[in-house]
Image (cartoon, rainbow, N blue to C red; front, side, top):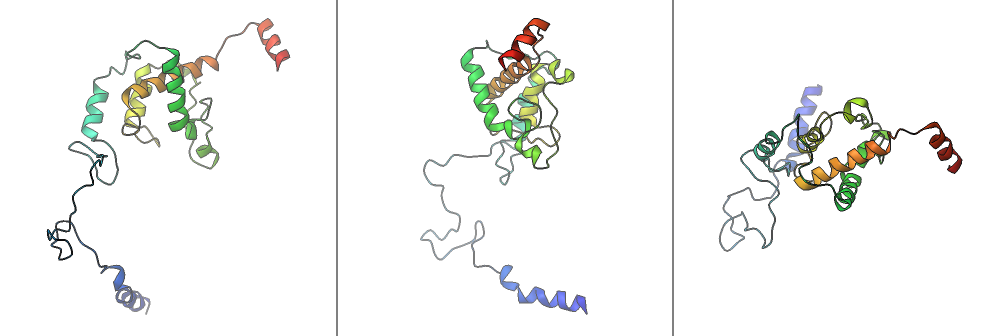
Length: 190
């Protein structure tokens, strides 16, 4: 009986399957050139590129991402330009946009997304992540890792390095070795 009802419902909702629309490269009587595919509007910016780009993902070509990542030495790779205050500020700005939702403002892995039930990322302040090379963070931003998706199409390479520099600054700020006297002075100020 249930199978008959389900089979019958398919024909009732047939309009969901048969929608009035043009399919790509289908002939059209509506347009003067009789083509359903329309030319791009002037100034359109392509969101996908490369041989493996998925039109639905909006990501850059995977081939280019992995080629770029392989060019960076995952063991020795350090930030490839001198650090300045301007780069750290840019890194902070990009970190606040792209990283804070999961990693939190101070990098402990307690962002808003985590507080709403998403699995927490590791804290940047663990001994393992404090001792890892800069290129590790760069590659994770580029390729993604675990639940984190790739940010390669969202964050430019120079900005990825700026984020890495800011992560290192966060690590230093949360792991300062103070003498007992300095610790007492800090408590008095608070």
